[in-house]
Image (cartoon, rainbow, N blue to C red):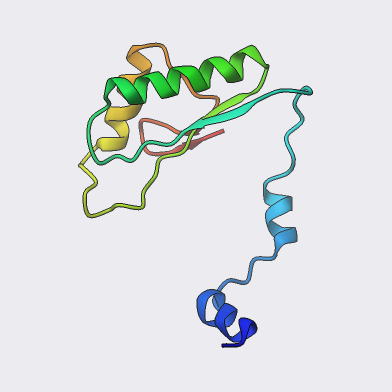
Length: 112
């Protein structure tokens, strides 16, 4: 199969260029050695101690290096997603002092 043909089948409706994406998401201006970390839970269940631990470590690494900590909610499993799952995750983490610099907010809006 020709690669161009396959690319057209998969991505034919995408008109965004790499240059468009670089303009939309410019490089971060952070200090050298700054860590950009993330926590990416799937809203398919309730927050558990393992998720809290992973988020806390990621937050601490970003803070200690003058970096950025962001929340990226994985929405790839819509069939198992629970109602208000994202809000529950954000609220649970906030109760333990885990706060994000960027990412989703409890009201469903994106923050930056």
